[in-house]
Amino acid sequence: MKNEAVGLCRVSTAEQRVDGNSLESQQKHVYDFADKLECQIERLWSLDVSSKAGKNVKRKDLLEIRQYCKEHRHIKYFIVDKLNRLMREVEYFYWFKVELKMMGVQLLFADPTQQELNGDSDIAMWKTFVEAFSAEKDNRERAQTTITRMKDRTLQGYYLSRPPQGYKKSGTPGLFYPDSESFSLLQEAFRNIATGRMTKYEAFQDLTKKGYTTRSGKELRIDKFTAMLKHDYYAGFVSISTWDEKFQKIKGLHTPMITEEEHNSIQSNLSGRRTFVRQQHNPEFPMSNILYCECGSKFTGLNQGNGKGKYYPKYKCRGCGIQPNRGAIHEGVEDVLNVVVPRDDFIKELQTSLEVVWREERKNSLLYVSNLEKRLLGLNEKINGLVMALSENPTLAEDIKIAISKVKADITKLEQQIQEAKKIENDLVEFVGFSLSFFKDKAKGFWELDYENRQKCKQLAFPGEIIFNSSKKVCTPQISPILNLKPNKKEPRNDSISHMVARRGIEPLLPG
Image (cartoon, rainbow, N blue to C red):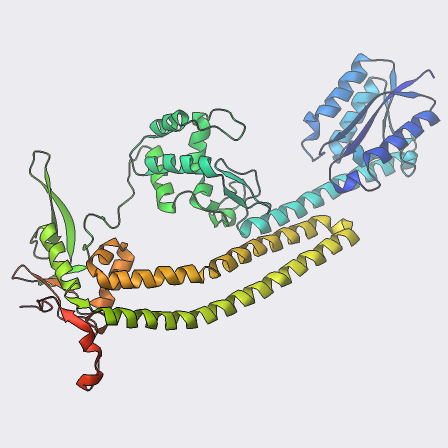
């Protein structure tokens, strides 16, 4: 054998590894054709690489093949199975072919259906161009289909890239879960910057001291940390900056690390405009915007200083400006709340009533769980059907895999809903326990509520508002029947439930 040759076998998708374009199939064609030419393959490149338009100029395998032929002038042939196994780009195909020709190397196709392209006739040249054009056209259509699918998934809230720092992969492509310790460390750093407690550099140093590393185990760099601070994924969004406005700030399916307000605050701080997350409800003044002044305005909290570093907590009326002491206000509210003390027999009756209500609720919950489990069974059957369809239609593998991923995501959500719904017995204990403890110590329960629930509780218990009057007393014009334990309608004394309560020695405070 006088002549020497080099060869190339290439696949770019999972389907090509198992169908007629597999590496083994291509290798057989290349070696068989080399035998036909009475030459031997001196070196064969067999690999998994993409040949997207624009990427071929820097493709490592093509650069190596070109350099190898340049350094080994005895190489006469470069054999590839089919034209589209070399590349799918008309312009660079001809450039590469001419480059080889200038080095005395002839490009040949080994597949029996394309060996007719190896000739120098007009027909062979025309068919070669048609084949190159078809390969590029097919590549563009495939790329467009992939982008369309990616856009559809993105609009659903999936992030089709590698997981950002602090997150890890789930069983569903594009849906990521918080990565335990790294998530909490980053969350703390982000919030320190958002509230102004730390600068970007201070938060970065704090992260490093606490041993935070990237997913690969390396130390985080400040430029990477800055990019993370600008990434709105951490605020619960999915954005593709290279696409149009439609694909910006899509509500993601993942768990946000920070709120949108915190994210905006971080961006302002990074740009040099120091801002702070506004504290909506100061826990030091739980009656802010709940307590009314006799003038009709609401009270807000105020820490008044004496100029020597000491502060005196007071409430301030937004209207007339009076500033009663916080402690006096809170004592007055507690007197109003604890004006009625239920007796033991009422507590028992309340517990019985709560359990009756809860049993009815439990029936509804069990029915809800049953319906969820039926839906879950249907989704599992759908998964089985898709798996069977995948085995019968391998050409639709990509579409079927996407459908399976979507159904799996629905299954995960359903399983979580079922788990939550089955907690009803524990919820009963908590609900009854809270209800009874609230009636026994209403003031303590009132202060432990968050602002939203404290407002709801006030509206239920004191429909006529809680007022600070001109006599510097906290009072209310009306106590709800829920709290004073008296029916709205007049009933015969023997049938009234008013005997179930005892006064503490004071009447409910009324205006004036």
